[in-house]
Length: 303
Ligand code: NAD
Image 1 (spheres, rainbow, N blue to C red):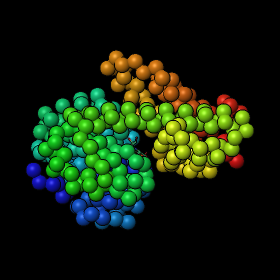
Image 2 (image 1 turned 30 degrees about the vertical axis):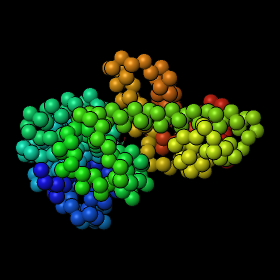
Image 3 (image 1 turned 90 degrees about the horizontal axis):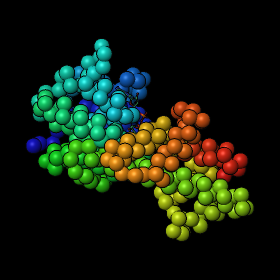
Image 4 (image 1 turned 90 degrees about the vertical axis):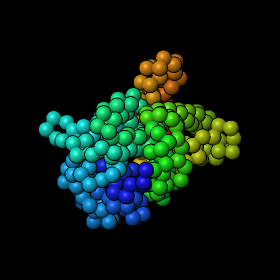
């Protein structure tokens, strides 16, 4: 199998925009689509890429199509179409490869993969970890589910966007690992916020305490990369939304229920984050969750 050169990219959001920009910069022939036409227009005015007028138009001329959309529902709609709108699959020929790089639900991915296989379309899941800064400089971790053969043929494409590419197993396994990782990451964030609030009430400066955690066994990705930068600074600007984080926690909990593995602690974390989102409202950064815990404790971590 040869590495595809004509690539369609659907979803130019906070992550998709810089990922697609790297593909355009690497010389792939890129066709892009986003339902937000302003963002699509901005992309083609800043990069060497063609704007498609519709989803079927993306697929007409591409050997590989990448989706980077909010969730499985959006991915399914973009591929299979909805109500009056045709999707990508209408014009995807046999042998086309579809790679879903969104953080989607693994069971839905498996189902979609079966439907596409019936049309001789190869599907892979390749969710990413690392956030907006790593999407910008091409250092994402990419977790690939599917077949080794298709991974090897797409590897040069992945290597433009990420510097660690993992094969996790059959289709859907990348999405499973990604959701489970994000559950663990959220648990680290919530635990750090709670402990910093206790420390603050005792009279310890949160910045000093966070520095101590980072030199101690309690450190995690949030203490190292999020607390000072986004919470203590009050910028709450990581680029990963609270809405998407709660979606990922729902995905992880659905999977644990489906597989009948008890996850009582994780479920508690999911409930807290979902309550925070309910109370704070939509459209916020995931680090805004700290403000909800501050409200419960009636203490602020930053000025
Ligand atoms: P986003 O909301 O910023 O972007 C989603 C984009 O998809 C938007 O531009 C939207 O207009 C577009 N879109 C929605 N439905 C569409 C459709 N049917 N057809 C075409 N375009 C459509 O989200 P994001 O932060 O870029 O995240 C994308 C995915 O990556 C999510 O699954 C998220 O969980 C995951 N992710 C995000 C981060 C992060 O730090 N933001 C990190 C890793 C993974």
